[in-house]
Length: 280
Image: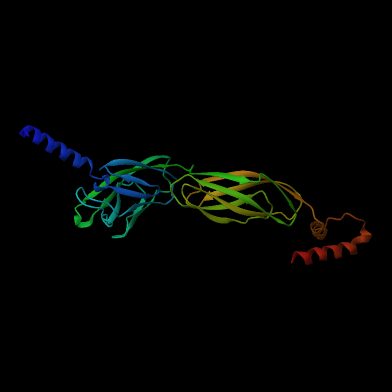
């Protein structure tokens, strides 16, 4: 075989062997939260999603990675750090030497709507595994519009003094696992609130009980508000139609509502007492 032919064959074999090297042998970052993604280029840019002002969110990565010549190292990344945050934002870097590494980030409560960037860096402490560090740029869009609200049914029929559950669905489109408070406006002397957690990128359904003691037609606002900021809130209207019951009529008598001649006042008293006994 000619020397040139031998050289060409050797070069071709070397090229093919390089092509067969698995992609996992290159250094990379596996993002686990707020979604699954692999970063394998230094100083690349990644859009994380939407977040409300003041809402805390986490970015979590796997400690596993590899250098350019060796197998996967399950504890290759030992630390995950944040830098270059906008003014007023707060961050907490990850713990050391854990299988997953999380940074905690909280935008300032007065952050204006818009896109904001910062740096995230995975570090091989002391470069013991010859991985160095891999950094990427993260972008977050800050907006109060981080969830969708749905309420069913929109017309509720109930008897006075009884409780009816309203289904409140929160579709959290942001990156934060958010704490919300559900409340109601439009029902006299009714101020019950309910605290719920809606996980990021999920739809959660909650039941919220409403009770009206007097018959009538009520226009009720179901209010859902984030604990992080009053700017993050939505309201939907429900019509509540409450019908009278015998007990509610008896109770109304005790409030001075007479429907019969005065000679029946002793009967009114008995009817009111009956209503109070059943209300216990």
